[in-house]
Length: 265
Ligand code: 5RP
Image 1: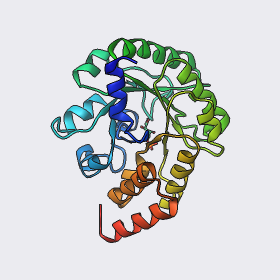
Image 2: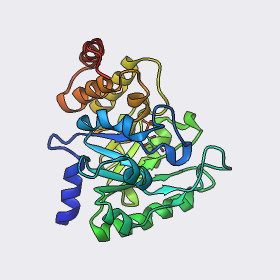
Image 3: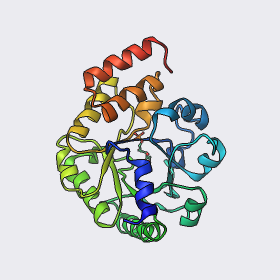
């Protein structure tokens, strides 16, 4: 691996081999998502506990201080919306030159395996990998399911994750699911877990993050289950304890309760 690529990967994946990415890119197709209406207000208190931000260029430029940032994973796919015809019909929205200008540590793109736009999204990934490898910028592939949340099972996610790795993604972001070892076991590059819509209890989040880590994930790319929580700082600190300190779900819950009690928000 060339020095630039190795250095960027090391900015993302910490020395313990684990990573906590904070995605705040949801507005690119959802508009002003609940509790991300004013991005900097959401990002600022969480930034010290994130290893990297997953973000679009628009929110990066408008809402993040370049002197107080963390490594950036630039969201470079889009072109569709919640109210449009098909979320899967994404293109590449941001050039590699722009990623270099913004000093991105990586770029991120969604793929839509099994949809009408499977081929386009996979060829977009391949093109981005060609450009990224030329510039020393890793590509993170997102195995997107759009509105079809029921797709999140081991068979589908293992298929999509493996295809992403085969096409050259350096990191794959997918969903946690039952039998998650089937996903990580078939994917030869590091896997991080997204959370999807907010779940009912904090303990559920701690349990799936812990389970995924035991089964081979290197970390998370977890958004709504952090910043839509009433106590987002307590939440990210508890998740960080699982990822970087090997805390169990019970220990993470205890930490969450103690921080919540101390009004960490
Ligand atoms: C949105 C994304 C998000 O980065 C991803 O879904 C993670 O966020 P969450 O944990 O809220 O699902 O790719 O398209």
